[in-house]
Structure formats: structure tokens, C-alpha cells
Length: 114
Length: 115
Image (cartoon, rainbow over all chains, first blue to last red; front, side, top):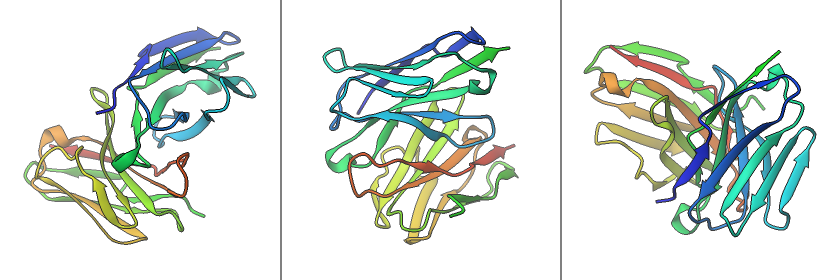
């Protein structure tokens, strides 16, 4: 059973600050690590994902850093905005008979104060 | 496309009643997932289907839960009998399992309250 540990559980930052969320996993069939974002009353939606050939992926203010040897990856939100307030989930893919399956972390509730 | 469609959006029922949640995946997607979300347990995968066939139901809590996918455009999750601890938000998601890096698209969820 895949274990995914996400931290912190909650995070409060001021507008303009940097938000950092971490994720650790035990094993994975594929080096593909997505982050999903969920707003209240909505389903999670893919925010950004990193694939195996790079150690960092940046899209606008959002960056994923990946440390394969440590089996860890993190989400950095630069210049955090109140509109970024949401719950963030990391996920790790399964393989073999679990092909297509994602195991999600526990989630991080991010609050960005104006 | 309208995205993943779930119904009902809210369901309030009494303990012991049967509850049926419905999902219409995105057209062309061949994988469908049912998740349950609670504050205590986070986002849990209950069961998923590939090409209408159940692949992994190890997350289904107990025999009271059952899921079907009679065709590529419809799935149901049934709880019978329901219990207060089943209260949660249930999400359906779909994806195209054509490669390893397949994005899952989530529906808006069904908020279930069992009294």
C-alpha cells in the first residue's frame, strides 16, 4: 500500500509571501508527481505536475521541486495571493495492477491573508 | 465538454436508508474513480474502473458499499444500509488511461449526510 505523507496540515501566510508544502512517498512506479488544488465546494483540479526528466518545474508563481534520492517533492507558491487560499494535495501514481491510480496526501489547507 | 457530472449534489438521508450516487464521466475517458473525502481521513480512493471493469476495490469500506459501471458513460455508487459514519463528500473522477501520466478530472462532488 502506497504511503504518501504531506506537510504541513495547514499553512497561513501573508500576501506576497512564499508558501511551501512538502510531500514524501515510499515508492512509485513512475516519476510523475502532480499537485491538485481544491477550492471550497469544488472537486480537486490539477494545478501542476512534474515528470521524470527534470528536477524542477515552474509554471508562473508555482514551482515543483523533486528530490528523487530523498523520495520527496515540494510545491512552492511565490508571491502568494488571497486567491491561492485553498487545499492542496500531492499525489503519487501506482503501477502494475494499480496503473492509473493516484494515492493522495492528506492535504494542506493554505490561507493567504491580504 | 461539461466535465464530470455528479448527482445529486446534496443528499440527506436517515440511517438505514439506501443511497445511490451517480456519475457521468467525460466522454472519451476510459478510467473512472470514486473517492470519499472527510476531514479525518482526507481523500480516499474507494474503487476505480478501467474500460467499465472494476480494477481495484480495496478502498471500499465494507459490503454495504457497491459500485457499478454498466457502460462507458455512467457509474453508480450505492450504500445500503447507510450509517452516520458514511457522511462525507463523494467525488467521481475520470481520466484517459492512455499513458502513465493521466490527469484525473474531478466532478463537483455529492455531499452526503446520514442522520
